[in-house]
Amino acid sequence: MKIASWNVNSLNVRLPHLERWCAEARPDIVALQETKLEDAKFPVAALEGAGYRSVYSGQKTYNGVAILARAPIGEVEHGIAGFDDPQRRVLSATVGEPGSAQALRIVNLYVVNGQSVGSEKYAYKLDWLAKVGAFLAEEIRRHPRLVVMGDFNIAPDDRDVHDPAAWHEQVLCSTPERDALRRLLDIGLVDSFRLFNEDGGHYSWWDYRQGAFRRNLGLRIDLVLVSDALRARCRRAWIERELRTWERASDHTPVVLELEDDC
DNA sequence: ATGGTTGGAGCCCAA
Image 1 (cartoon, rainbow, N blue to C red):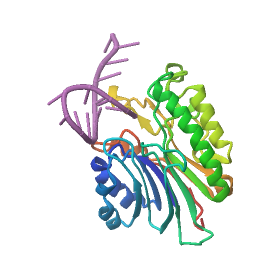
Image 2: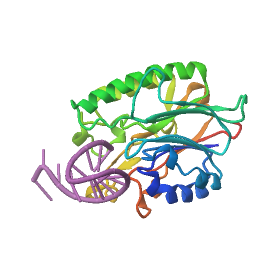
Image 3: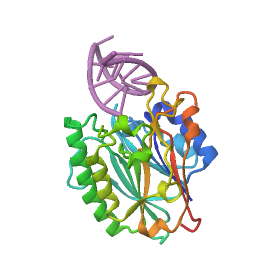
Image 4: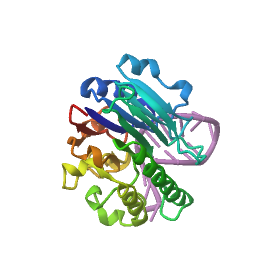
């Protein structure tokens, strides 16, 4: 069972990449961010042809999240109850046969970027993360088999940063952001990549500018978090770095978690 | 050097 998260930075542009990667890697569940598509324009038929059901929450130009799965998708929840946010950044669903004990609860997050420390968008980011924390505390209580994945726009620690000195207390790396991520993990989640990789230098995003990918100037900001109930079922976690070399690549690559087959 | 590249909208904004 393979579970993946990928910020595609426009599904219109990246649909061929997604189809190719799904055919090659055959992930069972994929969370997409920055689809930048209104729901009416979501490529349901193309993905069905590739073997995936899809649920989505999108808007024109910005944001947009989707969950694809080879198994049935149910209990779809858009956004966060009681938080009337026009930005489409949160989508949750249960994947698996209805009523099955093997079903997984998936929460897909496109965390606010925050622009720069001290900006209005940064304040919105911290407020948004606090609301997500309250939401996840309830989700994990109702759904112990929980996967929270997405573009977190936070590098968890300095191992996840190519140049920690340059990024020190900058947006995506600042202490308040890392503390906010820590509070999400404290609910009972673990960064699956770190179950298998302790060293630095593994990144999921590289800026389009300055030849950042060629020079491996990246950050690891795309994460697959799993609840304690799933922790012992994790078999392998990795970053699909090779997709960043493809023609017209997204600035992010997929991050993948493999769970035991009976999961 | 406060730069640069990409995507989407529409002649700038967000990342």
